[in-house]
Length: 128
Image (cartoon, rainbow, N blue to C red; front, top):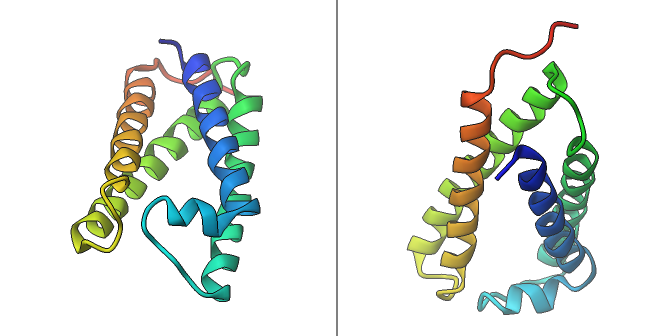
């Protein structure tokens, strides 16, 4: 798999979950056995819009050449997915969400490892 393919996959995942959280957060959360009040729904919408922003970044970074910016994006996604995986694991262990949360944990771990692989195996970035 290439970094370009990984960025496209990330953009598609971000678009799907971003639209879900931004437009129908109650239905998306229900899939994990979660219900919330109006404040929680607004926070979910805010999270969805952030995911949409990350999807846009991943989509437009897919064709970037080797550069400091592309390495920063790669490291940023590695950090995001690593921290998100840790957060989701702690949440899953509370017993609050249903078993579907482990799908999200697996997805975050796979993406964290993939972005980490590309970041740590790339040669140094082009000097600007």
